[in-house]
Length: 102
View 1 (cartoon, helix red, strand yellow):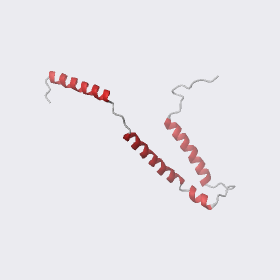
View 2: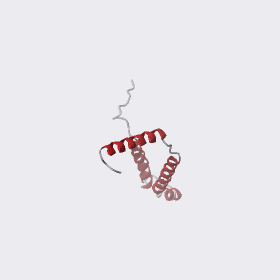
View 3: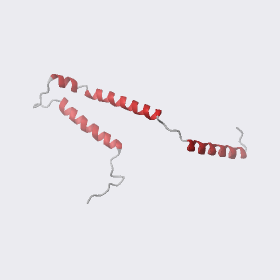
View 4: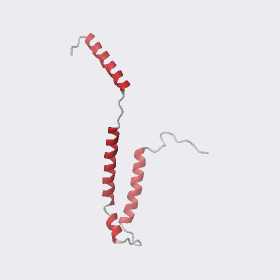
């Protein structure tokens, strides 16, 4: 029988990213440290050593593109803005009633 995971047992997004980073990092370290039985050709070794820097730059570019896209497609919430204006006017009226001048 399968059981549904409780919210505490579910892996968070941070946990998923860290698990993936550990997996990729350990695979990179295993290849970069070149165990005695493994002889990689020189072009592979030259591409393998700076790979974490390339991945970090690619992740930064992806992050900037994602933030830029989300900002460009950000939706206005007219209902929430109207409700906030009502709250502000009610608060101002209450403060004016108590004798505070603006």
